[in-house]
Length: 169
View 1 (tube, rainbow, N blue to C red):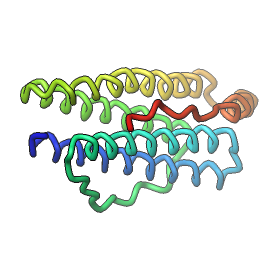
View 2 (cartoon, rainbow, N blue to C red):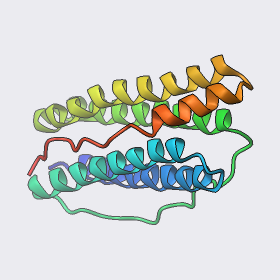
View 3 (cartoon, helix red, strand yellow):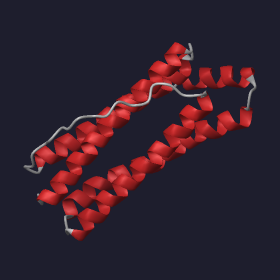
View 4 (cartoon, rainbow, N blue to C red):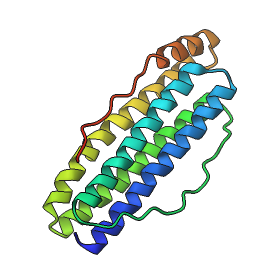
């Protein structure tokens, strides 16, 4: 594997771990507000991001590369509102989409067809991630300050479950 590609994949692996850390912080925020459904939604996000990181780890190792873990910055731990949390989630997912697109661009530039193929799963996954976070964000905006609506949404989000992705190893 090209060293530039290896470094970029390691960077993304660490970005995925930061995402898990961010969503765990958001879960703690919702737990502190006794919003168990919102906390559950974030717990599923944590599990997804850890699975994403693991897929990067496994792929790097599978290609004979060296996995390099770096320091993960502390995420925020407090937000002004539920709306602010989901605005953050949606913006974060758009940023991750950009990072994945940059990886695809690098794989294409390096004619690394195997990595380009590997990354296509993430391209599709990010469409789902943005849609999911945007959907919750739009519901929060639509209900405004209606506490009954927030209660119903909390109940809905409590039903979300983690489905592990197909393993690459």
